[in-house]
Length: 401
Image (cartoon, rainbow, N blue to C red; front, side, top):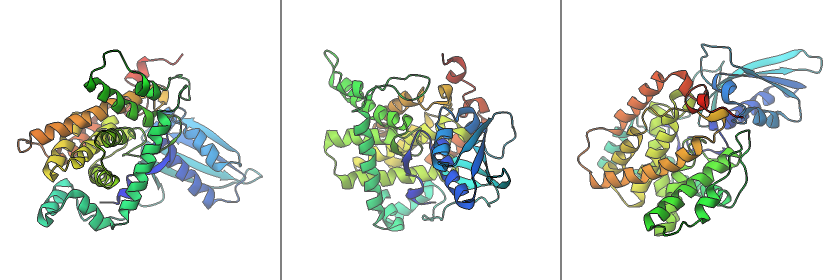
């Protein structure tokens, strides 16, 4: 399994596959053809269908600037080798093409070039699945976060602390900002209102849910506006894990060391899904993004309260199991509706899954690995209309005026 640094990526939203990936591809192509006077980029599949709403064209233009670039959205080409494909072409001042290259944005901000063999980042962990992680923890009598420190080195703590600080910054910016999100939907930012508005006769439980949702809204709205966030595991699902950690840290005063341990555990859950399935909405629907994020958050919550490795696995399994079949249908291609509210609801589910697992430990029948496999098979069976193409579901029925 790969490093947690391949899971937690820090960059600008609103989509790891639609902005971070294309940005990396543009940088790579401009490096290959520094003599190019202008560029042409053709987007296919999900990038073509939802690229405008995801700001794909804007991030490519900004990365290749000041050189001019034409963007083509090709929604006709079918039978693509990957749902997030793009073709870059470079031309000299006389219009002669210097070269071309196709890239696939494979999720989590990662890319793969067409002419390169399909490779994974160098493995850091000698595990194939979560069962092997649990077996190792029991053999060594250690916590799951200790496994991360042993295989990644103690320096991974500094990286995870930076991740945590970045997450907190996104939340604080989000709950301090008002106005409209970019795009044709004219969605009002709601995090500040959720955080500050106190309903009459508000019960303590309602207050807790309101604040938890406010934190999820804050990160998701920052993501939708192109702000700096952390993929956890993606941009579109970046609000779930930070909201849970931020809320509980404020409530219980957990130390940064404890939060870092929780992020390490969440990371193990996330890379297990990446290794054995997918975290890309274009490949497996929103269950791959929000589902994985909910599982990561549930496991992290358990670690905050010193739950056992078995309880952590159970919480992650519950969280992912009850997101199976979740479709990806962003209205207008924007990571706004239903994405932002979905992050808030998922953060609540994560806390519920953690609570269930700690009470019902020892009674479960389903392993986390089995749910991961099921999620991936479900994702492959989903009609393409429900895999980030904005052709089905809410995206089909709600028309942007």
